Image (cartoon, rainbow, N blue to C red):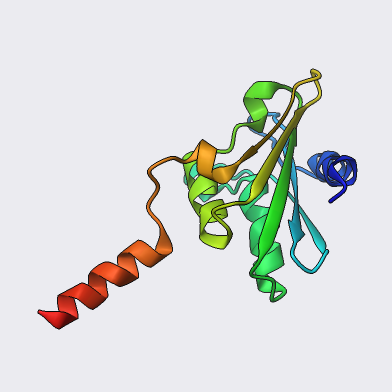
Length: 139
């Protein structure tokens, strides 16, 4: 995996952000097991709950194109603070690979490579719910 290329693509995606309310521009790029890269940016809405983060935009683009195995995601923002995925994004990342590499890169020089498992410990996992449902059927 070429981390530099993934970060570059995330940075390019940040330039397409639609953020008229916060002015914060975030970009993300996901790498799939098949070697494909999908980019996303944050998209705001005046009704803030309808906004979408860059991470989820990139993941949803990959999934909508048939990709299910995401191995890495790069998140680019102007500072360390803006590279922290929110809880919703962390949960979506975990859905597609609990061992996903998360590359955080800030325009302020911040750089970190971690995993979603480390960013979302003691998580709610897809298999857990299915196991609980199946256990209930056996009673």
